[in-house]
Amino acid sequence: MPKVLITGNEALAEAAVRAGCRRYFGYPITPQNEIPEFMARRLPEIGGTFIQAESELAAINMVYGAAAVGERAMTSSSSPGISLMQEALSFMAASELPAVIVNMQRGGPGLGNISPSQADYFQAVKGGGHGDYKLLVYAPSTIQEIVDLTVLAFDKADEYRNPVMILGDGVLGQMMEPVELPDITPKTVDKPWALTGAKGRPGKVIRSLFMLPGEDGALERQNYKMKAKYDRMCEHEVLCEMVQTDDAEIVLVAFGTSARIAKTAVHLARVEGIKAGLIRPITLFPFPEKIIAEIAGRAERFLVVEMNLGQMVEDVRLAVNGKAPVAFYGRPGGAVLAVDDILSAIHNCVHGKEPEKIYTGSE
Amino acid sequence: MHKVFSRPSSLKDKPFRYCPGCSHGVLHRIVGETIDLLGVRDRAIGIAPVGCAVFAYDYFNIDMIEVPHGRPPAIATGMKRSRPEAIVFSYQGDGDLAAIGTAEIVHAAARGENITVIFVNNGNYGMTGGQMAPTTLPGQKTTTTPGGRDVRLAGNPLRMCEMLATLDGPVYIERVSVDSPRNVQNATKAIQRAFKNQIEGRGFSFVEALSMCPTDWGLTPKQALEWVRNSMMKYYPLGVYKDIGSAQGVKGQERMGQV
Image (cartoon, rainbow over all chains, first blue to last red; front, top):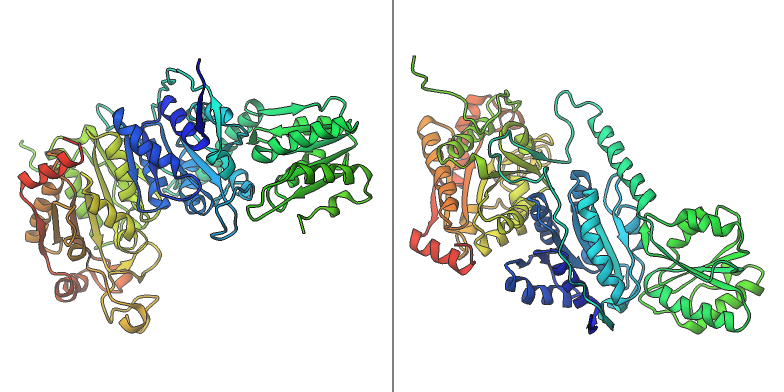
């Protein structure tokens, strides 16, 4: 199949179309505007729907409505816009509705800047809205992976009846790489729960409110039902890339754009004779905690590298569970990591006394 | 024996749990009868708000959804654009539609979405115990305007029909009341019209119903009727605020590619 040179944002949009997404609702925000602009051109050609909503609140609720009638629907935004969507994401998870939400992260907090960042990790993986719920979260690190994970995201959203997030950043959205766009027949999924009009049957209800008379305990039961679903995700959906971890003495852990840079640092460290390796979580929820725990049994130390002040490092420390020291190197505020800085962090981890306290960002 | 009165098949055989004197029961019944009359029960989808009418999903025997506060018009947009054959309506209170959801209703109206909106205006937040609503009248006492609504501090009420009628998108906007048999008949005609417009692809239709909340107003049902007639109707006059002919309505739909 011939490859095309394409930006991450446009590749993602085309992959969504090929995965059967015909309903897109969004609101402009940098650095993801190529997605709505692409959808505005592409979807009307094939009988789909594009609406530029009046806000991110409206956009995600339009997705909610389209999902409730059984459509494959998507929205995309960047950090501040994703914050505005958290209410509806909580409702959709509670109502068990599938959809794909793309966050091409930018620097924060607040309006921040439009540079790439990974500071929305907590929001994405811990349930950014209210209540006990989770999103299935994919973190691509190449444009090809954006394409492949977007197709997978629609399938998994339908399979689990849960919103799925693709967590990218400004680098991945804006960068061009050659990719193969798959020629696929979208999976058709039976959706007996969808609202289609009550022809020849009683009315159906999609809801997240459980307080009718006689419904004592119903909300707790619904939460346990959702937990069982998240447990199934943890069992079956973990995706993770490992680079030279078999004999690694120092294991880096990084996702997305950071992982691309960390991979180069690992190779340079190997050239110097340092036994370095990399764990790259591809799913951030479910998190590859078992894999990390297993490697913690044999690696001497860990170094977590993120474009934030240290978020995923907390999950790595929980997985390592005290079996090895876990250091952190990262930069917040839309600063992109440099290979040399990660390499220095590796040197200091290997030789330093308190590696986790040395690196707090560039001066 | 000839049966002259029965429960609409679009309503469940379930007693309403609304307060005595509340208008939701009457309005639910009108909506249910309308869906039956127009023969669209098999493709109707209703959207319940947050507020007292959140439990609408438990009373209508049609496909229903309950959604975040104020967002029903956005939900309706996603549904109707995905499934144009569906008859989609939102049923919203004044807090839902005229406070937290103002942006969604204005923009759904401006886009001329081919949906039906039933707006129930009782001038306060009933579900949460009678706080000030965007439609609370000047001087009206609520739990958060204990001395009466002081417009210098709490702002002025919103007249949604009048506001939305300034937009090019809607085809039909009417304010009704259900305080008397005659007004119930008028409200029924208006709601039928609002659904018929959608069935015929004419576009955005909006019916506001002045409604009673004796419990949170601290009035008897009879006093509450007087409040609707003597106070609410003065600030919120009944009548048709927009009604563009079918030809123009159809043109609007052609513009949106929905015909």
